[in-house]
Length: 347
Image (tube, rainbow, N blue to C red):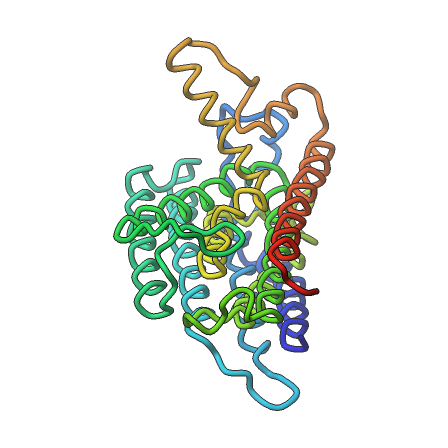
C-alpha cells in the first residue's frame, strides 16, 4: 500500500511542479495549439495556448512508477505486466506527440492523417497483444469482471486493437474543453487503482498467479498516472494554461485499455469510461445521420460542443460531464464489487 501511495504522490508532485516549466518552455518553442475553424467561436481565444502537455503527465507517470517501487523493506520488484503497460503508455504518447508536432510545425489543426494514425495504433496493438499473451501470459478470452469462457484465439489481436483504438480515440474526442478529458481520465485511473489493489488482496478469487500479470505492480502504475493527471489538471482546468494535446489523450486512452486487458476487465472499461463512449457515439451518430439523411443530430459533435453551442458556459459543461463520469465510474466499481460478493467473495 505504501508503494501505491508513494507512486501517486510522486506523480502528483512531478506534474504539479513541472507543468509551469513546460508552459514557459513550450511557449518559447512555439508549441501552441491551433484551433479548428469550424469549432465554437469562443475557443478562438485559446489559439496559441501551449500544447503537448501530455509529456508532463508521462514524466510524472514514469517517475512515480519507478519511485513507487521503494517499499518499507527495500526495492519492490518490477513485473512484466507493469513494464508492458508502461511501454504501451509511452508508445501511445509518442504517437500522439508525432500528431501534435505535425500540427505545430504546419500551423494547422490537422496532424497525422487518419490512415497513418490507424496504422500506428494497429502496430502498437499487435506488439501489445504479443507481449500480453506471450510474455505476460494473459489469456485470449474476453473478460468483464474477470475472464469468461469466450476464447477468441488469434482473433484476440483484433479485439485488442478495437479496445486500444476505441479508448484512445474516445479520450481524444473528449479532449475539447479545458480539463474535461484529463479530469475524467483521472477518475477512471483511480478506479483501476482500486480494482488492481482489490485483485491483489484477493488473489485466489481472481486466479492471480496463473499468469504473469501482477495487479499490485499495475496498481502502482495506475496510481502514478492518476497522480500525474491530478497535478496536470491543476494547470489544465479552465482557463487552461496548457493543453495535453493528442500526446496526452492518446496516451491516457491507450493506458486505460491496457489496464483493462491486463486486469481482465475489458468490457468493464465501457462502463468505467462511459463518458468517452458517449462522446464517441455522438460523433458516429452525427456522421451517420449527415451522410445518410443530410441532417445533424447535434448542433455540433462531439456532444460536449452540442451543449456549449446550445448556450451552456464551458465550465458548466465540464463540471456536469465530470459528474456524469464519476457516476459512470461509481456504477462500474459497484458492479465489480457486487460480482465479487455474488460469487462468494469475502470482503
